[in-house]
Every structure is written in C-alpha cells, then in structure tokens.
Length: 355
Image (cartoon, rainbow, N blue to C red; front, side, top):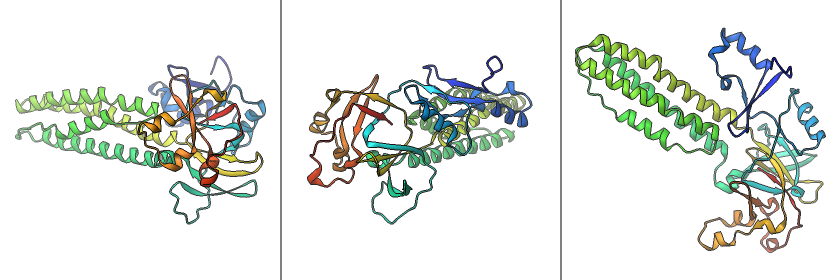
C-alpha cells in the first residue's frame, strides 16, 4: 500500500481467490484501538468477501457498483471465473441487488417465500432458493452453526473453570476425566461446512487443543505427585497459550459465519422487461458461455433413485460441467408453473449466470 498508493491491498488465498481487502481506513481504525499493528494478522484487519466484479463485466457495471451505494468505494477488485453450483439463463435475469432484509411480509404457507419487494413499481415475490433446493436457508444453517460453536465454546470454558478449581485444591487428587474434552474434539472433527474459510478456522482448532490435552496431563500428574508449584505453572501455561488460542479461534469462526453471509436477490423476468420473481442466493459470481449440447440431462440421476421433490425436479434443466464440479441449471419460471405448461420448451440461450 505504501509502494503503490491505491489506498487498499487485496488479500488472496493460495489459489489466488479473492478473500478480502484492507484499506487505509481499516488501518487507521485499528491504530485507534491497537498500539502495535505488528501483533495483528492480515485476517484481523481485512474486510471479508469485498465487493468485486468479473473481468468480463461492462465498465458501466463497475461504475454502478462503486457509486450507486450508501457509501461509495474507490477500489473495485476484478475477478476471474470461478465455478459455482447454480446457473440461470442470462435472459431470465433482470437485475441483482444486495438483500437488506427490507421485504414486506405476507401470510403464506410456502416455506421458501420470504416477502414482497416493490421493484420497478411492481410488487415482486421473493423466495429463498436455499429453501427451495435444500429444504433450509443459508441463514438457518448459519444460526445452527453459530449455536453449536457457542455451545462448545461454553463447554470448553466450563471445563477450564472446573480444572482450575481442581488444581487450586492442593489436598485433592485429580481423576483427570477427559469426557468433556473428548466431546469437544468430536465436535470440531465432525463439523461440516461448505465455507472454505470457516473450514480452515475449524481445522486450526486441533493443534492448540492437542497441546491443551498434553499440558493438562502433565499438570494432573505433577499435582497428584504433590508438586503443586509445577502444576500451577502448567495451568498458567494452558491459560496463556492453548486455551487462549482456542478462544480466539472459536471467536474467529463465529465472526466468519456472521461476516460471510451477504445474500443477493436475483430478480428474474419472463419477458425481459418486467420482474417475475426474486430469488435469494448466497452470492452472484460470474457468467459463462455454453452450448445446448453441453448441458447434461438429469434423467440418469433420477432413474437410479436420486431423490428430488417434484417442484425442484421441475425447475432443474440439467448439469453444466465446470472445472472441478457441476452447476445445476434451473428455470425460475418453473417454480409456480402449471403442470400443463411444464413440458414446454424454453427459448434457447448460450449464456448462464453462476450462483
């Protein structure tokens, strides 16, 4: 940032994927609360999942992203293509906008319906695509993950409090019951997530946790040998090192879940002019060009017992092969399409948006 005065520095993963951005404003705010920046890591300062734009996008789109917002930005990262999971035909997409949770709610029995947005002077129903395709929204999954992290962090704190009291009782023999620690280890080893950054944080729990277990064994052994001074030193080491590292990682995991969720509403259209419905998605990535023959049908999957509910099956038009995985092509107009229209062919297009 000092060599190239752009006011910001991008943070990339090992695979050169955009992970965050650090601005001069981030540094100024940190200086107000931290005396020594050398004690911080890049992840402590960066804003995760910054606003970005694909390299193929028109320059007008870039200007709109930078200026048409409450707080204008001066740095806009440009990204290359990256394979994702859901595709829509470009002709089915009218526009996208950040979800601000400002929808009008209405009584409705459809679990995926989240409200109505007055868009282009047209009341447009908005549906959560995660609920439609997976049975649960990303927001619900995030809440569940947050609750699990809070529960097991509280369990760790409870264990340490009890262990600290045991070490303080010099005439007491410690039995060193590891059941609570074992359950914590099972939790983080079996934790499942599609968020690569969150997965990395969870995986980092193992090293300080194993160090905590090892030092705990030493503390118990020396305490039971009546070397109470050494046992106290081991306790202080646990509190200062492995226990504190675990606390920071639990906090980082919770923060990652909270900061990473920035959903987008994709407004779809049937005539290219007026909004049809809005779909809530986790993020909008890129567009790709594919020919009709590159779209693989789902018949073979459903024929061998791949269970898909009728509504979802009616939306899915096939699979598009990406670099390392597939993207499911869906037809948003089929969400509430009458049965007698379900078999009609859609107008062909070669461009698809990835979500």
